[in-house]
Image (cartoon, rainbow, N blue to C red):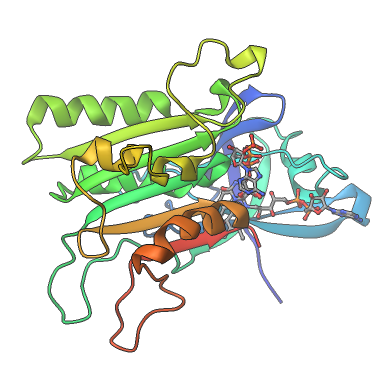
Length: 281
Ligand SMILES: Cc1cc2nc3c(=O)[nH]c(=O)nc-3n(C[C@H](O)[C@H](O)[C@H](O)COP(=O)(O)OP(=O)(O)OC[C@H]3O[C@@H](n4cnc5c(N)ncnc54)[C@H](O)[C@@H]3O)c2cc1C
Ligand SMILES: NC(=O)c1ccc[n+]([C@@H]2O[C@H](COP(=O)([O-])OP(=O)(O)OC[C@H]3O[C@@H](n4cnc5c(N)ncnc54)[C@H](OP(=O)(O)O)[C@@H]3O)[C@@H](O)[C@H]2O)c1
């Protein structure tokens, strides 16, 4: 039988009615060891299920070097019917208890070596749709904390401007890259808004469309991502990490497949691949 550990919710930041940042600390002992890109499973008894414990996976947004808490970025699923666990989670208060299972997940771990055993020095491009940015909040802070010298680009797509929850954190990481120089920390962050026509988004002047539009070539055959990094994206110079809806992953692969990119799931016989992804499905 699965034995949930106990945690205490120490921080709830409601960004809007259906989006929150939540932190918990284990009731006994330390924050568990985990790797950037992993997820934790939360569990709570759910009234509508006669008190049965419902468990769901949530990507860890905090980085492994942060030993103070585990941070999560959670959407309250409301359609077509209220989600079982998220409805409970959005009733939770600081000080309440949650059940959790040890962090796990291999899909989005930072790739360190190429198949021939040499270090993977390729540019890292992380693409997150909505709450799918969470694993890259962890990854970017982790790479920063350990002084990784690879080029890192984080791209976030959201429907509304107030859903760019980590804009401040990523912007600070980018300023640090400008201050220290790309030889020390090479980081850029860009966001896109997929419903630019809506009144609430009227202040948005950046990229528009879903996150995969960063890969769509413009009239000059250069994509916004290529314009940002200043060269053609090829399977030899870039590895992609993608998280969110399955449609986001499919949308990204629509651009990358014709360029010869393959996912880790479909890696070649020699073990090589250029895309790691994780979706809800
Ligand atoms: C590896 C991984 C990491 C994840 N990380 C995150 C994260 O960081 N943040 C995040 O917000 N989410 C994340 N998720 C998604 C999360 O695990 C849950 O799936 C999500 O929160 C919904 O859970 P729920 O219990 O509230 O919804 P559920 O009750 O499981 O409902 C899921 C969907 O089914 C529909 N549904 C349920 N019952 C019915 C019914 N009877 N008839 C018709 N439709 C129905 C609901 O309306 C909803 O659309 C992650 C998922 C995975 C696999
Ligand atoms: N590690 C993981 O596996 C992981 C981690 C975090 C979240 N998730 C899951 O990822 C999903 C994202 O949820 P969210 O509420 O945060 O997303 P969301 O806010 O509804 O959408 C985020 C972005 O994705 C676009 N989008 C919506 N549906 C899409 C589709 N079918 N195909 C392609 N793009 C789509 C939206 O565009 P429009 O404005 O046009 O709708 C928006 O730009 C959820 O299912 C969540 O549970 C998984």
